[in-house]
Length: 94
View 1 (cartoon, one colour):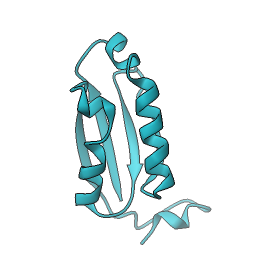
View 2 (cartoon, one colour):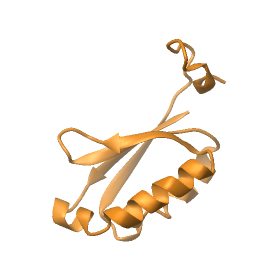
View 3 (cartoon, helix red, strand yellow):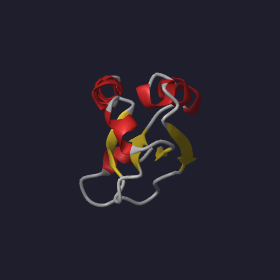
View 4 (cartoon, helix red, strand yellow):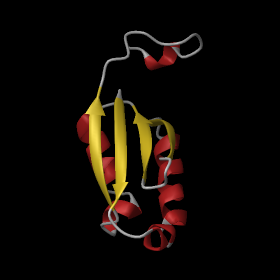
């Protein structure tokens, strides 16, 4: 399991100019079964993605993000093993 933290490097106006492409990319990664949750940070200085699968494939997928392609954000990937989860989130384990 991975937590991907995006930190914007440019003003929000530049980020917003590519938001539609970013959302389309997110939907594609969800359809592949790679992403489990995503959203904006508060305050809005980046975003967070909860992902599963192979790290190399995740890193490759991140290069397809328009925010990456236009050098709008930095990405930090943190891998963790969810050994305990709330009821209903059992699919996150393993």
